Image (cartoon, rainbow over all chains, first blue to last red; front, top):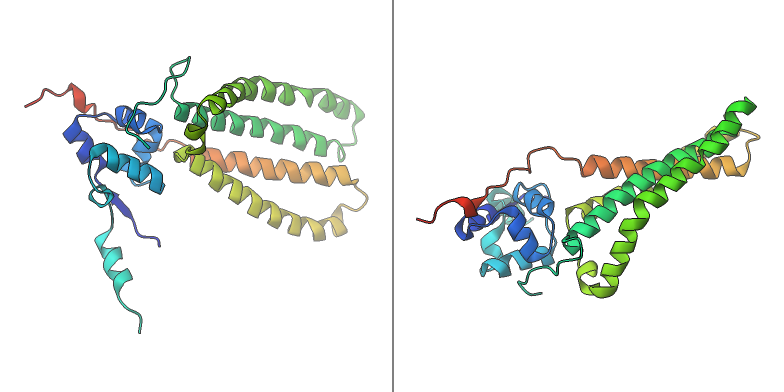
Length: 79
Length: 171
């Protein structure tokens, strides 16, 4: 799977008025980890993704989603 | 996994920051070891005895620097690991992943290096002792690891923007 992982961390941070450093501290990673996830440079582990989702109190799919184009091409059945 | 604040350490660094710092220092240490092994290998092909003697003495410098750079953070990490074992075992941040990738790249390229070295040795490097090849291979492997890590973990500037949302007045 090489689909781009979109995320809405920045949106949720804005809603909660959190800086990257604050969020990083709360979920136990460094600010660099949060910033690279936000810009799509780093795909987080399941544990980090779940920690972020749990912190914001939403399902993980609300924050992370595969790019729609990739989704549709991958779901096309092979004949 | 709780939504709790990280346990502050004596220097107010979070466990994740200490792990990242250990990785950065380790990569610097690996770079220094690369120099040390490269010098050790070069001593077998340099014919000038004065230069060889000088390199022999200089070889100690990177080793001392490695100890000075890595050891203090390693002690800090070991203490942290002893106190908060779960925090360290969950370390899967950006730099940890980059170090893993660099290690995998170093392993693969070392394998390629050894495959190339075999025919080259038979043709051009006949008569050199085994320590030359061991030092050269270690220098190559550690060099790829450190360069790979610094290249993967470098700051491109595209991820450095941070909105300080909490400074905005609430509507």
